[in-house]
Image 1: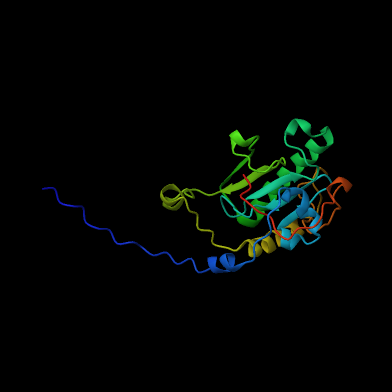
Image 2: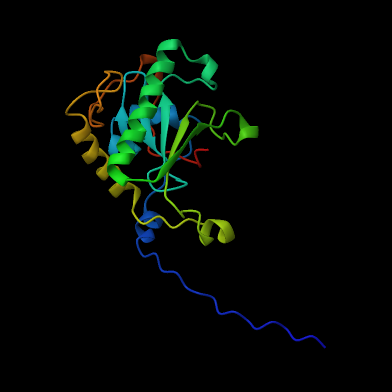
Length: 209
């Protein structure tokens, strides 16, 4: 009679820093977070790290990797073909700025940058947004492969503060689209287009995919 394989002892992981995330209050549900978050007027609460003229950068509340950012046009569209030429240019500069900011702040080894257009491609929010995901050698370890879990070593709020701090130094010599080697500070506040003055909400919801 075959013997049963020996029982493996479960290893315990204690990421104590996660308690701050678990205990944090959650935003109420909304179908339009990317339009409503800029209207909050509180970028720390919304996790907005940069506001441009026609687009902005938002930290993904459910990141694939630490520093996962979303580049989002203020105007609510669902496809890149719906953007005006000016909006495409502004969003492109915001993407470049995001890469520059994350490089200075986190020193990743590479990036994944792209769009999920449509639910079949993984999109879950009907508002166009691009993903900027910093990557490190070996970052696809056993946790996401076997357990579908990622351990993030820093709270979103602490990382937001770090990105804003680095952005203030990048902004000393130029702004996105200026042709300089640096970008405008993330702390610079630009008003959203009038069409985006939706009622304020208290929280972003759902994975941004």
